[in-house]
Length: 415
Image (cartoon, rainbow, N blue to C red):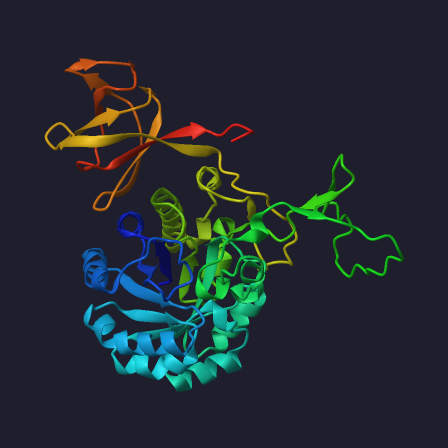
């Protein structure tokens, strides 16, 4: 059975992905992971994280995958006893020097994608060092992955959905060079996602195109001022929802969703869709079909457009920014939930009507998406509610006092 591994940037996201079928979760510890701008967890939080995951029968992997200098490496080694006592399952390491210490504390050692593992010989060496799993390089094709997985003496893991870095295995110095904020230490400011302006020096053109792509218009666009603009540093997001059978047959042990810095509703949506797709294939592989609503739902949350990365060809399409169909608007907060009638009382500061789609998020609730079918004020049914009101909304899933409420609003071209 393949593992579905989902991201958790905070307690709300943790609960959200577990509620939607994650077999395992990965998360960051302050100072040691590749998402320094996410809220992350403290050392004292780890026991609670492990406890919540155990409620769902899920495994827990702690990301410690930045480039470690001597000080950070010593600190991490000193913290291994406390990490182990929290009862999480394993560490994601970018530094093979800490494999032995990790394993000696009873923790699984998973090797980060930043190690750029691209062949079975590396996997055999990692086995000797004590690693249980390695995340394969994102620059591999599906054919290469299948061949490597069959030869591997340890578990292999691949990314199947989420943001893609322009640099090999995320080893990028652009942010550090421009802002002094290192991507390799988890502090990337993502200058690659910006719109760049190009200047062209007159002279002999010695550029040779070895690409199979004849039309290179995707690279630059002309502007009225005579300059050229491009987003060629910014690739589209990976999306493999249409290729679950091929992935399942590759022999890989774990499918990983990228997105610790993204919202809880993103994690809930993406995890739930891949859970449904994987289960559907397992239940009836011969009659498996891709459901059109899966892609529709994936495009409703944050995305930069979709590509299949290097799985089938060399990706070339660039992406400007978020291309989701909807944006979230903060519109209220839960005042109470009434279990007997399955209704939530919500204080709202924006208008609301029957048919609106809302998201309710909280540390225990996780992330719940709900389309409003029934509302009442003081016991009387209403179709519309103006901001400043308290309204009762029928919702079958329990939500909790102080949970945040968002309304999904269709994105306009200038949003």
